[in-house]
Length: 359
Image (cartoon, rainbow, N blue to C red; front, side, top):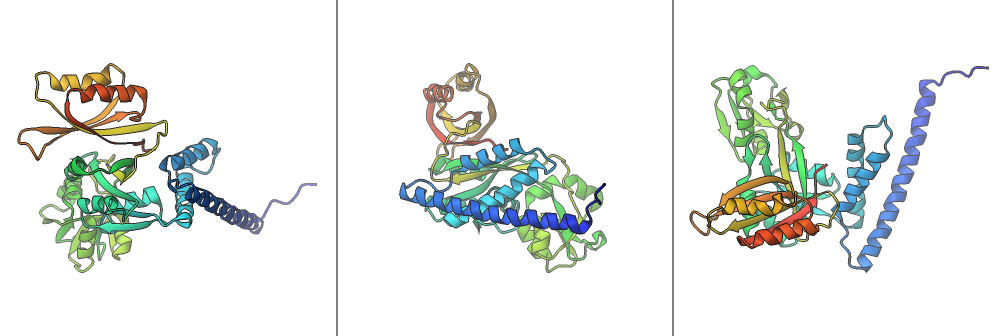
């Protein structure tokens, strides 16, 4: 005899039962995490190991048969891990503020909502907060896919002893926000210079002749516009909710693939994960053919270089410092040998850190 098909009530009851088990398992996981924390405390081990998080994400995504999407699975486990870490020890993370900037979004993407996220007014302030031990980590922007490097961040590494422990790739979408939500009300547009540059064509096409006003951040722009019914801000969707603004147009950036890369900085280096990237800075001697020689140690060992950037050395006129990203961990034998060979033709060489590649 054929059974009746389940009703909506039956299916909702099943969902409730599954949710009950999920809550039970989350608390069981939290109790185990607290046990781990007590063991780490007794043996003086670091309570947060970024490489372990990556292993969890990769293992779960490899086991996931669907239909639940992997991106959503990672987002959920980011919050689970964040909440469990907060039970072990409050994790303070400094970032280039204020709130609702893309640096804030990147920090939430990396550390979840249970970490103590602290906005600071400048990139040097983020470095100082971590150097003094007031924050365990700092998050600073380093480059945008269309507008290039954030030179101030690179300059800070010359003097700082902090290490890069992770990178965050954030897909950046710019929204046009205002109090009324009507494009015809807009008489001026506020934003940080970079978002304005990234939306230049859209602004020329849709708001020709409207004054563009540079301010310190996208969040400051949103704050200004919250008191001005004739203005608009280029900012994030998060800024709209924080400052009670309406979205006039969403995703007004000119380039579809618009990413900003952020670096996570800490006082201690990161352990080898097996899929790492290493960042270094160095200054070479002024000799004929030196630029070719500095690349040779990597080329002959088949080590991929993903980025080379030069900056003026502020202590000496007409001398330059090079920032270089390469594949591998500084402890890998081939990478270590290449760095030793490079060091022979350098005035100085500094390893900024090895860290897991962004997923």
